Length: 383
Ligand code: SF4
Ligand code: SF4
Image 1 (cartoon, rainbow, N blue to C red):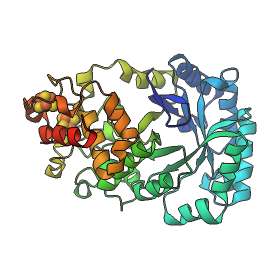
Image 2 (cartoon, rainbow, N blue to C red):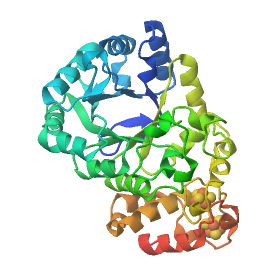
Image 3 (tube, protein in one colour):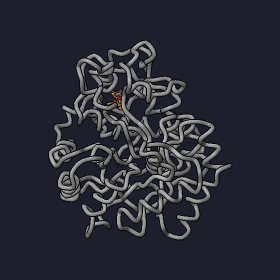
Image 4 (cartoon, protein in one colour):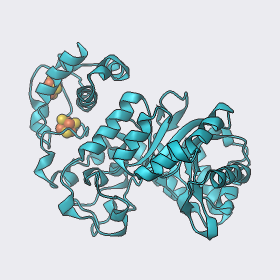
């Protein structure tokens, strides 16, 4: 497993994580084999949003004796009142379900207490201002019941507001190449119920990119949900692209977005965990997702998607990384003096090393002005 730092929390997550939702309703044996496989392969980041006691207790049994090997995301606001999965913004209900989560799991701490599914202004207001839910999460953190505060969202504008509150340590967000092209104003959850509307997909949505860059700038890690868009990206029939992507390509796309730390794959067997971690051994050429997505629209032109299709570079420059840090610095010049500047400095080669050979520009499917970007990066970062 490869691990990435979870921002300032001191924790490190495997780049492949486990979304446990598909285990809901399964026999204990299935839950146990899935968690055993996760443990064996170093998959430590796990999301448990399900409100039902049955699945929570099965997970608690499955991780007994190895609880400290997992980083659990437990959600504040996920409920099953009337035996239906629901979101609650009532503080007393939130407390009741969060306390029962710990009882069911048989643990006295949760790594990330996640403010659940904040997709609208109204939810944001309730959670952060009127309902006292964010304050509850802060109290849990102060008392050590949770190690960090997280939040989950599908809306890039609201998610940016959330990370800018300064209160959260981690964001769970839906990331895949199709959603990234859906305008921020559209509810992407509708895209899971219908076929993708190719007409509304123009280019990487600026608001989504702004969110990822803001997270990177603020050192707030992203854990990814909906990596495969509910399997639609893998299906020749449903994909909006010129051809289906593979699981590994979808994982690779998400892991190459700024700030992304771990991609949570919804597995429901040992075999599916093993399939997901196969990404780690994949031939780099097989991870190239550009061919499938580049036919979408020419508005892609000029925007780096951080795919590194343009390598090798004779000067040893990680072109995607330089472009990524440059984009963040262009969004906020002060970022160059902070964490982003440090990450840039740690690269083995920099913009100033570019010899202008142009081989990258010939290979880039998106006509990015790489040489110009290398010059800009050298100017902004000073090397
Ligand atoms: S410059 Fe082009 S090929 Fe290179 S990482 Fe960016 S988009 Fe990909
Ligand atoms: S133009 Fe610069 S960045 Fe591009 S391959 Fe050549 S040396 Fe590398």
